[in-house]
Every structure is written in C-alpha cells, then in structure tokens.
Image 1 (cartoon, rainbow over the protein chains, first blue to last red):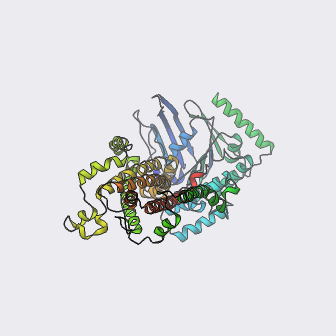
Image 2: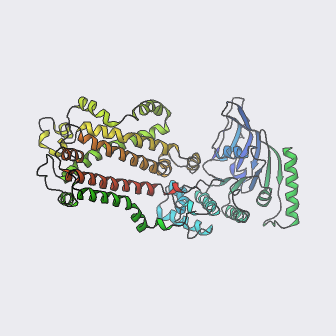
Image 3: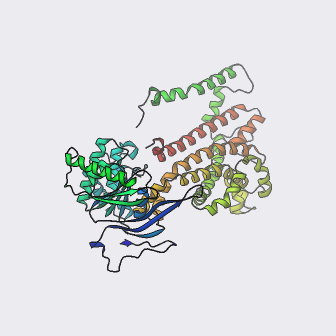
Length: 268
Length: 286
C-alpha cells in the first residue's frame, strides 16, 4: 500500500496522477521533500530541503555524503518515523524494514525470539514461526546461536540477527542507516555480501546510507550524493559494473576515485 | 563479554565469606551468655523457643512464635500487595501521560520523605481501631474472627504508604527508560499498543519494579515491626519482641530478632533473584 504525505503550510507538490501504479513504478519516491527541526535553544534547523529522487524497485541504492548532511533524516522520512514539512513521499507503507548501526534487537529476548518477533506480531502460530526462524538462522550462519541473548553475540552476529529479523518481517523495502560502520573491515565485507545475497533472493529494494565510498561502490546500483546545510540531492551516479564486483580490480579503484571526486565536488 | 569467574565467586567460598560476620556475632552472643549477663540468654534457651514455635509462651502475654510470625507476614503481605497493585499501574500511567504525572508528582514528592511510622497515630485516630474483620463482618461480629480482627486497617495503610513510593518511582524509571529505537522498531513491524507493552515496555520495566519492591520491602519490614510495638496491637513479632523485653523474657526477644532477620533475608533473596532473572540483560552494555 502506498503512503502519500502532502503536508506543510507553504503549499504542496502535486501528487502523482491517479494512474500511478506501484508495480511499474519506483518502490520509494521523494518529491520536493523538506524537513526542519527546532533545536534545544529554539533555533529552526533546516535538515533537508527539496529532496527529490526515486528508488527503483528491486535495486540497491545508496545515499552518500558527509556526516550530518541529512541522510538519516531522509531515511527516517522514508520509513514514516518523521513527517515532512512539505513535499510528497510515496513508500510501501507497512512493508518497510529499518536497520541502524544500533541493531535494536531486544536484549531480554533470545536471538531466535528476536528474529521471530515480526512473525509473532503478525499472529503466525508457534510451530510455523519457529520453523521459519530456524531457516533464517541457518541461512545467516547463526546456527547454534539462536538460544543466546544479543549481548552474548559479537557485533557482527548481532547485525546478522538484525538482518534476519528484516527477512522474517518480509519487508519489501529495507532502509539501512550505516548498519556496518561500527564493525571491523573483514566482518563488514562479509555482511555486505550477505546483505546483497539475501536482498536478491528476497527481491527486496534496499536504500542504504553510508559515508564509506568503498561500501557505496561495492553495493549500489545507484548513488545519490547528499550535500550538507541543508541536505539536498545534488548528484546521481549510476554504478553499472556487473556483480560480483572485485575490490582488487583497477576498474573498482577507478570507480571509487571517480565517486570520491564527484562527492568532493558536490559538497564543495 | 563476561568476566571469567574468580575464586571468590564460587558458591562455597561466597557462603563462607558471608558467614564471617554472623559467626562473630554468634561468638559475641556466646561470650555474653557465658558472662552471666541478665539480658543475654543462652543458646539453649533461645533454641528451645525456636524449636517449639507453636507453644504458647507460659509467662508472656503473647501468642506463640508461629502465630506472631503469621500475623506479621499477613500485615506485611497485605500492605505490600496493595502498594504493588496501586503503584505499578499509576507509575505506568504517569510515565506515559504528562497530565497524570503533573497531577500526582507534587503530592508524591511531598509525601515521600515522611516516615510512615509518624503517621500511624494520626491514621489510627482517623480510622479508629478498625480491622479487616470489622470492615468485612461488622463491629459486632468482628471479635469472632481472631486473625482478621488483629489486622488493623491503620497498619495496612501505613505499610502501603511505606511500600508505595519506591515501587512507583521504579515503575516510572522503567517505562521512561524504554529506548525510542525499540518503540520505532515495533511500530515498523506493525505492532499494536498491547503488543508493544507486552514485548517491550513490560519486560524492560520489570527489573526496575523488582528493584523498587526490594527497596520497599526493607522499608516495610522496619515499619511493621515498629507499628506492632505501638499500643493497640496484640500480636506479631514486634509485639512479642517488645513484650518480652518488658518482662525480661529475653529468650523470646532474641528468638523474634532471629526470625525477623531470617525472614527478611529470605524475602530479600527471593526478590533479588526475581530482579536478576528479569534484568539479566541490564548488566551488560551492548
């Protein structure tokens, strides 16, 4: 189901036409979206302004930019956790999975119970959800760890479990806010591979926020560069290299350099 | 993630270390008894009382030790239970609704520092000598129901007063401490309000409630023993303790003290286990 949001005192961007058909159109669409916050001392902070972009269905896209440029704000607006001051957001409401650097696993539940939580919320009966959780645990390399609590797992294993919870939720759109940035390089690469594999097999659309150029180039079909103060989409880069991508190759290095230059040019 | 167990963490060693000071106390008691002191009874006299808890003391205007224990525990339980069923829901409401908090917060902050014991005379005057029996069966029939007739409503009220605030405060802390990120996750998973309470708010809050209960228990133990010394009470461990002192039957005084300590230790241990079980996840930072 699509969610259209058309709020703001300064008038609204036009909604899409009634013929809009989600199955032929982007999974996620921002049109002229702006958002401000009021700081503790009463100052109005314009976080993002006039953000417009579409995320194609089934693709992996990245929002790249400096820290504090509004990437997280854009992701939270896409998830419906915040409402825009103006503009329109079309997103698959009710089918969104959200994952941050802080995995948000519930510490008083075992890993298996955490992964199975979306199924229990939907009312799936116990044998069925336990079976599904077992499949997910095995596919994520967490076999034998289901009965442990999140605080008994390593950081990488917690993020795997968090991805497992996204899989159980059967969300069609995953919004990931720097999910691997606190992990070591080797674990990060492993989880990036796992993310691609699970997203492809579940035919999920992914929008990932990152400040790592390596991560963006390795994962994404498209990178949107976000400038700071206030956040705006200033450039869109298509990454057409076929997968699997080789970090050691000259082409990858050249692409990274190109993205880095475009990023630096865009943010000034 | 977890520190490895040290030599002093092993159960036999822990119990041995915990026995040092009680052992010294028993030694002091033994030496006092041997010195011929009039106020320190011998081990045998005290053991005799503890070994025959159902015997009515021959020269003491008090019921048996077992009956005294029962009356103290009934009063404590009623006051404590009343505190839990009022403090927890009110704490949850106050934590989630600012209007409720603004209504109750001033009176809670005002009332909390007041020692419940100092309120007993006023509350006794207000409620008279009414008991559970007078409330349930009426003034004329109350005397037929021995045990409920000895559970004074004024005492239950001040026990409730003593237990209410730590549990209320703990509940508020627990509910307020729930991370927004967890609540947002639940929202995105399509959880209803009841599911969010069941899977997030309640499990997060339980160890805080348990901690509040443990603090409250310490308070109500002091209050119930002190209240039983108050004129108008005819039974209970505090009553026995005080009466025995007045008639120099110190073996009953010492027995009452030992029983109070033992029950206090047992109830505190139970609550500590409950707190640890519900809050095992709090000890480790993720």
